Length: 395
Image (cartoon, rainbow, N blue to C red; front, side, top):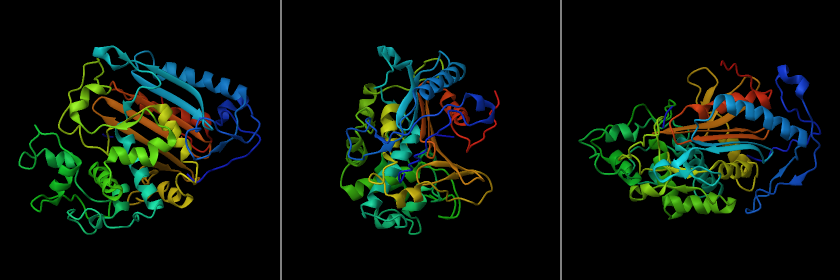
């Protein structure tokens, strides 16, 4: 993979398009304080403003034009835009498993690569809310064989642990036989081996995006819950939210039972020894399920106000700029004090992007299983729904 406390904006008039160039197209909707119905399966009641019919139709038209121009007819994957918890536009196309003729629809789980980190982090944060651990607790106090006493849970969440990427460590034939699938426990054992140099930098001193952090976080969830990560994820997030088309892939013996990964020409990407680790990747889900999750994050009953304040702020300021990382989410921090919150994903032919605009309560999700950078294009829609972020996107 390369490269919410509930905000209630009960205002009578919300612009369709906030960019000055679209001022003449603005429409309004009336606040009605209705209870959202899409979350009927979970206990986290969320209140959103209702949307005016004209707003919805004008937004659909804008998004349709965008989709046609940026995604076109050769896209294999899913695409969804929602505001105030309501789906405004969604589209599904291509094949989940081309050789079997399995097409992609709204219920087809696709590999979201590093967007998995958002769910892994949320599992950890829910355990913090339950007083099962603290953010600044030493990793070694939970995983005794982990060798470094300086590394904390917060450092793993924010990619400030200084650890080397386990994939690079496993490339060394003296450390791992690539004919054998690597597991999360194997990663921990590699780190615990005193003969292996596992640090790139001193813990806590520098941001360095590293999948090892989230493999360890999944192990921490397992240790504290006494359950395998897939079951813990179900109990903490999936079942309460009714995310019925989401699961963790953790067994290569089942590789023919899930959607496949393809190159641009629909040639299937080969599975490899790194395809069994989870926490950093290997969550399969749908845009509708991710929307259920996104909506729940507006509820203080799902995640406390305090933990969301920790989640949605940056932790790395060694270098100037807007780019930063929170607890399981990427951030762009702007001078106006607004944070653009998102996460991207890339693993084999799977690419994905999830954007959540908290003040505007708008969600963008795109997932593809046939290699394409098109999912990352959804950020171009931001200017159509918010005046807080001004991106100069060139054609």
